[in-house]
Image 1 (cartoon, rainbow, N blue to C red):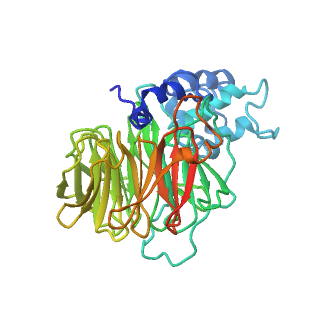
Image 2 (cartoon, rainbow, N blue to C red):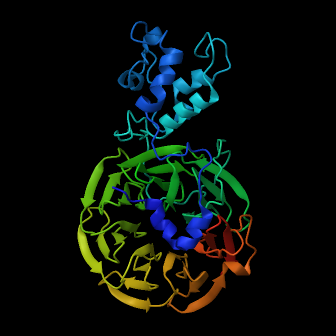
Image 3 (cartoon, rainbow, N blue to C red):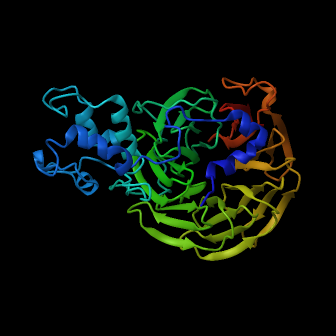
Length: 468
């Protein structure tokens, strides 16, 4: 399998921009091989830990001589927690400065490079070898809330934990962008991280670590208390993580794909996560125990967009050949197809009343669908020359779109064009592309009060406009 999920999204930038941007993570080791126990970690543990924690001697009942024993842990319990190096006892002791706790107790301490490898091995899923899948990284105890019970204060981040954020050699494009439906809060993708800010004032709240790789999908739950992040690393791993918005804490993780996940959403009652796969499948997972509840095998190409209706009754999915299907939001049962696009569906967005879903595609078309019978209520066949890259409904029924023509457009509730905006009209931001290369908008979002439209661009900037 030689697909590259991020490359699909990066097609929005055109080949010229791709070659110029050349985004490369400085923190990476220069190759695409995953960090594994056999290839990277075993030698470190053998050299530094085998005297006290090997086959001959096991202090505290802990043997670090084999993968199975490391994952099993010792007399004090597990020493590695998949996806959470910060919560792993092994990392605590090899980084401790306390003479009574630090390991190894005598001799040379582990090098910074060795510690970084062990952390990365844990955070990317405790692979045993290059042919292994990632270990389960689900956290028990997550409980969904009734989406109707949204009478309390809206969730906003406070005192998010610090982490070492990776840097990139070139500006990293905005590959995902989302706003909370209940609070002045926007989430923007970065490499290995999610940045949070106020969409109106642009004041930062901090960032949340996403060690799985690239967060290609971001979306908030209807209650606003959860942030879903999906993505991973192309042809290596793909997963969905649910974060507590207020604290940044990881609450649950579902899915274990061999490729980065490029489409995902969470149901309004927070009980289901839907993912779209490069394997052409749509999968529905329980958020409570991570179990697979349903698999939809209808699409004939990569599933590029999935979206639950606000009332939870429907699930809409789109693929790379232009097909859109409407499903029962609980069971995944088929309802009807929506046929209008001639090429890849880039995004799906539901109007707040759940009566209309908008779709946009590489054919330059934006369609407003009546979900009662699948009728296209409005069809803008040339909404953006060269292709539409994203669309998003605001709370009042206005639709914001962006495209390869470099424009951001605002459409009224009845489909009329209200605004035709250009990111070139604003300053290039903190991260301009090299001279002669054009900035393109990649993703759009609308603030919870409907007052502000946002657009991310190919250089990692986020632009904002006041809506009429």
